[in-house]
Length: 463
Image (cartoon, rainbow, N blue to C red; front, side, top):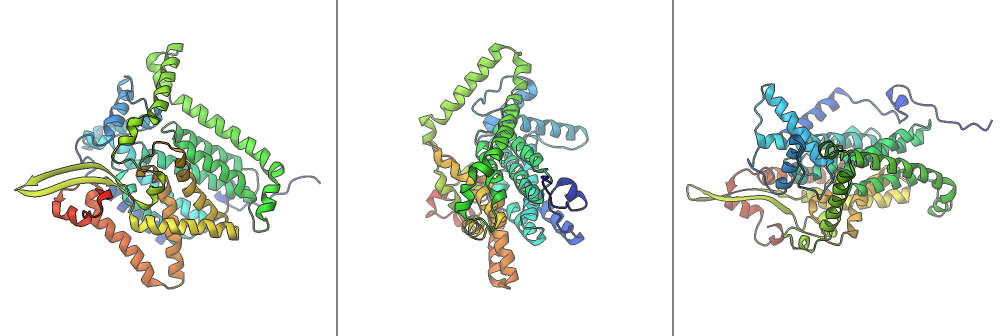
């Protein structure tokens, strides 16, 4: 009497983890998953060493990563160190592979980390979609495929920037937030383990770039509010119970996030202390770096960047970023090699609409998975409204798996309704556009006329 009753836990690993048991993947599912993963690895890894020089913002992050290998001062002090440390780990791993007989160029080794995390980004999209959909492998596979061919997900997996690293760890945090919801629904008290997982992923993200806080705040509110969101609750009743239901959980989650983020952020400066000494002088130098970080974000010069854009333009791919552009002549024929960072419009445009629809229907019908997808996409994006200087379209990379899920869910519905014309048109447009634009995701030398055809003059904002 007086004891809290829990649901009977499912057998097997799901019971041990405290989450819902789903149908196991069949051989067909494993083979298709592997096939898409190999494809994603090929389009991200082929000619990874090109351009064979630092390009775009690699000129900041590659030297920053090398400084951690050589134990010298990191001159790129406008971002926390952990992202550059991860790039340095990839460089060291590439060197190890060379000792084992591989022949990775220096430029390839710079990009090992982003390539690896970019590939895992695709794989985790499958896992997320599989869990959120309740074990629908067709939705999971479609979401994985859409992420594998998204323009931005490919181009950011081939350049040594921090943004794919941030996108990967933010996705990890969201996955733990969803597992928290599952564990909470199953009972058994294991949900706080997943809260720690989400908070740790948030800490890693923030220690790479400060905008990792956006993902952490989104995960926090998802874990706080969604567990009590059921079909029986009206919104009015939901908020009436705030002090009774939410306040205690809010304090617990806030403490978990505060401890995790603070500890990981502080630990990311350990290499700095090892180099400069554990002293007040080192602390003062780190403090000055943080002053520079704040000033950098309010520097009027940042407003003059030609590729700067406002957050509300990003979902519509109005202003992409050309990260590499190299026109030349071969036998007097005009050629060009370039890398553009832009979303796949046949995924991003309808995916945005389907994401909003999913959130609306989820709130209306109390469908937790749909609310989760909509909140994860909007949460990490809408916070950019507070930015006074604007930003760049690639800040939206953490939203790609959720656009992919929304599109995959629509494709699944079309297949159920036997609307094969719409289904094949959608998949065909995404696949064909990827094939056509792939040279501009991987700096392949093409005729200038080919560029003019894919980027006609009237698309002046795409140039």
